[in-house]
Image 1 (spheres, one colour):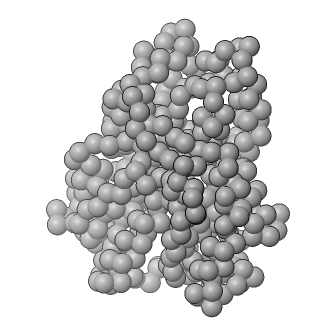
Image 2 (tube, rainbow, N blue to C red):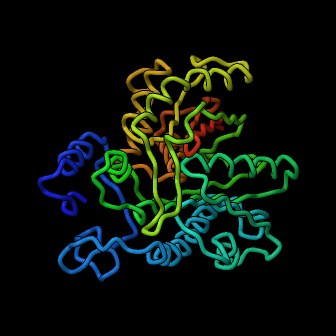
Amino acid sequence: MAAQLDPDGKGVRLARKIYRSSGIQTRYSVIPDLYDARGDGHFFDSEARFLSPSTKTRNDLYTIEARKLFSKTAADLLVGCPAFVSDDVTHVITVSCTGFFAPGPDYYIVKDLRLKPSVKRFHIGFMGCYAAFPALKMAEAFCSADPSSVVLVVCLEFCSLHLEPSEDIDDIIATSVFADGVSGALVSARKPSDGVAALMIDSFSSMLAPDSEGDMAWTIGDHGFDMVLSTYVPRILEANVAGIVDGLLKESGLARADIDHWAIHPGGRAILDKVEAGLNLSATALDASRRVLSQYGNMSSATILFVLDHILKSGSGATGDRMYAMAFGPGLTVESALFSQV
């Protein structure tokens, strides 16, 4: 990205400073050109010049790669939950804000996994980084209404498709943190199999930060989707996070001291720093979020499930442990959930 900017301009200096302090070591992309910047004429030319492709070119690559990874992730979910088979699945919920195609990924999961054609399908589009929570809310509602329901939730985001070199500081921040990733969850009212780490959904909460809709937004442009990510976002979260967290905990008869694990969406290093300060958390409380940020960057809606998975697989939890999970996105919308480890 720096190579695409004026070598004598302020953008290069800003980019290098922001990237160095991002807290990110590794990110992934579906764009082959980004690995060696010697492209096939879509994103980079043979001289490593960025071609600023059209939204159609970007979405065409999304369509090809997303279909494969949505279905693969859904299949992996079933493999990882041996108590379930494909015929058990009653609902499929897909989540994405970085591309579109129809028939959509929900359709292809049913087709590629040979699920029953009667499976109910839903797609949550263009909600941003917090969208895994509405998907889990839907899944929980289906299972509460009918305990025989088995819901596959798959979140996929190819944020790198929309990166664009820019001298603007907000654009540089966006290009420094966003990345590609896919994650999923199987939601059911059944008791988990012995030895399988799982979470029980306890409650959800939704809040809007006041007067902040201009600080985080996601729109469609001629050269990809345009992200507005203001430098004010971390400060807005710091000012509001305590009231949001304490409100949900109070509804459940809990306090911050009752939370064993914090799963905060790693929107960026500064965001995690401000949330930690706003909640007066210990220096290690957000280790799982910081580890995911370091290894993968911000993968929009897919990210929070990475954080929860890291906590479950780290071995640091025990049956009955409580987790507070939170993500935020355009609006500024803040979604939270309480989970218990089972």
